[in-house]
Structure formats: C-alpha cells, structure tokens
Figure 1 (cartoon, rainbow, N blue to C red):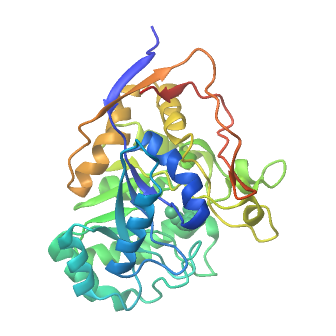
Figure 2: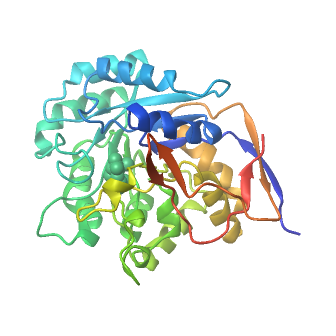
Length: 348
Ligand code: NCD
Ligand code: ZN
C-alpha cells in the first residue's frame, strides 16, 4: 500500500534568500506557509554586515509575515575581510546571529564584498570556534583557471580542508552541495561539519540547463552537475544521515534579470520546495527519512530544538497545482518547474 499521509515536525529551511522591498513582500508568504524558521542569507545590496544591519533586516522581515503565520527568521552576517570578531560574538551571544556566511568574493550573486584572502578572517574564525557559532560556506573557488563544474571540488581541497585543519573546532555548514566529492567529504570528515542540499539539486542535472536550448530558470550557483552527482545528493539526503539537511537556497530574481544575455543565478523554489522534496523521497521509497532531512537534522546541527508543532503532509490523487510565476509589482518571478508532477502538500 502506498503511504498517503505523514505527520512530521514542522520543517525549517536552513538556507534561504528573502531579499527586501517588494520582492520580500511577494515571496515571504510562500516560505511561512510551509516552514517555521529559516536561515536568512545576508547577500542584500548592501550586504548585512553588522548586528544593527541584521536587527533592521529582521524587523523588516517580521513586518512582512502574513497575519496568522508563525515564522522565525534566523539571521546571519555576511563575512567581509574587515568583520570584527567582537561584533560577531555580541551578535551570537544576544541570540540575534545564528551564523556567519562566507562568500568567496565574486563567487555568486551580490558577493563582491566577500572574502579574497582567507587569512584576513582568521581572527573571526578563531572567535567563532571558541563560541561555537557556525560558519556557512559558499564552497566554490572563483579562479578563472578552474572550470565552473570543478569549482566546488577544488574549493574543498584548496580552501575548506586547510581551513578545517587550522580550526578543527569550527562548526561548518558546507552549503548547497552539488557533487559526489562534497558528499564524500562531509561523510568522511571528522568534526562538526553539516551540509545543506537544495530542492533543485535533488531534481535537475546540468542537462536541464543546457540540453535542447538554454534554460535560464535552471541556472543557479553552484551550477548543477552531471547525473552521477545528482544521484549522490539524493542518496545522501534520503539516507537519514543527520549531517545532511534541507536548505532550499530559494533565490528569487525577476524574470528580466534571469532572461538576459548575462542572466542571474538562482532558482525560485519556496512555493513548491516541500512538495518537491517529499516527491523525491517518495520516488526513492525513503519517506521514513523525510522528517530527519526537513525537520530534525538542521536544528540538531545548529543546537536548536526541533519545532514542537507537527504538520500533516497529504498525498493527493491528482497533481498539486501551484502558479508558474509570482507577480511582483507588474513583473514576474518564475517558479521552479521540477519537470514531473507533485502529489504531496502540507495539509494544515
Ligand atoms: C543566490 C542568490 O541569487 O542570491 N543564487 C544562487 O544561484 N544560489 C546566491 C547563492 O546562494 O549563491
Ligand atoms: Zn544561496
């Protein structure tokens, strides 16, 4: 008999782009409908670099939570080469800051203020190791000499492993894994390492972007890799291994910014992420591990309790309907199309 209903702890999203202004207002309800908390990425323009920036951004997000929804934004700071260890410690101790995000400068959308020389941030990493504050890592080198499909694997060897040898106590989340090398690294590496896996990287490989025409809505960073790598991500996510948890990396951009000669990276998945992930788990016959991936392993890594609230996920007979795009002040944000029907939705 196929399962048609599941009750699980309320899910969280451990890597989310909410933006600000009209875009924030348009997209936030999709996250609050399905998730209780989210780690909010700090790559605004300008980036969230101080505790007062984070406090202000938190208040803006809270003002946009739809009436009747309960949602807790978990704030992060954007690491720059001049980030002050004392500022980070104050933010962590007050409970405002749940992690600091490391973007190698130039690696992705709004990462120009990121880090060029990792040695410059050693004092901050030292302090974060002492206080147990996670470092959230965009794991790609930006070296023009490294092929874009190899940038994650090269980052692990050249940057991440030396950094973890130097700071063995540092809690690290390797964000949005895209390769079997990253999965193997997380599984084989001692110490406090966790990893997020996105909705879209569980579903697409690089053919989705490039075969039969160029499809900008599937372009995100790190870029999707070969099918073999997608299979490794699915195996890790559905295994129940607590080091792997959901971070959707839902990253809305207006269509005008995606469909362009130089289009932005990012897939908008907040609206159907939970349905997509449940479908992937069902297809793998692994629904018994869904709760670990979406609701239990993330909070455990961050040292937070799982949500007390429980939700019902229901499998319908007919495919779930969701809009193909979301309107934002007369423009549109295209929603991620998984390419297959989805049957699971949150019922309460
Ligand atoms: C993100 C964005 O648009 O902010 N884009 C993406 O492709 N994931 C940035 C990021 O997380 O790399
Ligand atoms: Zn991201």
